[in-house]
Image (cartoon, rainbow, N blue to C red; front, side, top):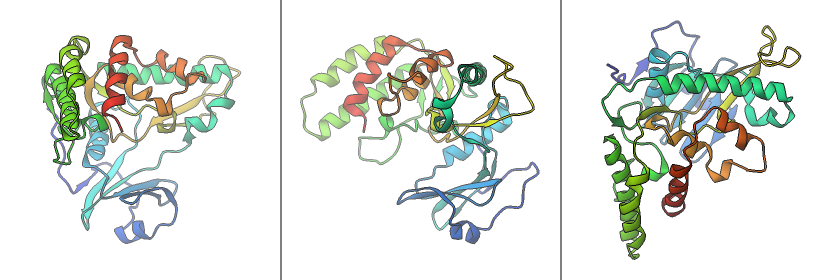
Length: 298
């Protein structure tokens, strides 16, 4: 049985020399920054996420993957701790570049090579067994870390976890009803979702889900020691999935829903078609999810 690790946490496996908190704060090699979080690269081997908006769930997800689903390539978490009410995730820096940097320039056989590897990773994730019975929520045992489940009830948290698929759907619909009531709008559409959404979003088991399978979260690096599985004339690439902050045990349609989020999914590009080769598509579920996403999403 999986039990989330205590914080502060340090990986028991051999580690590189780790930076101090002062060294992390002083680092000027900033990869990403918002008012409440920052990602810095200390060197070629270490990257650190820290801030008030960094969540324990991402760290717990990396520990879970390393211990229980090692076939899924993800960064290793070295340490996780709090300092001045900010969470620090000290992690392995993954070599390579995000897939969107090179995808348009790849040869067809190289795209085939990458998609085939993503298919194998996806198969491993679908076969993973949830450690809790009929559980829908984060890999840390907490709520659903997705904007549709950010509570509209005024308590500033993510809803969940949920016991059973019907409770998961009820949580989603209830969150929309709360939004409607907060804005003093008529509840006709809330009633529509309450009546019809459970009939469409049913029969789905908890599935290990990345929750943000975009090209920017797929790191690729050329492997010159191995031939392309699809065509010996093309290059071969190693793949690592990063940014597990939205991961969880979620219905098996959820991965494609998140991957096809309109702001990141362009139907005039071949990626939109290739995604279907490694993530299962549920057309009816997608239609309903896109409806409620337009009403409840950001």
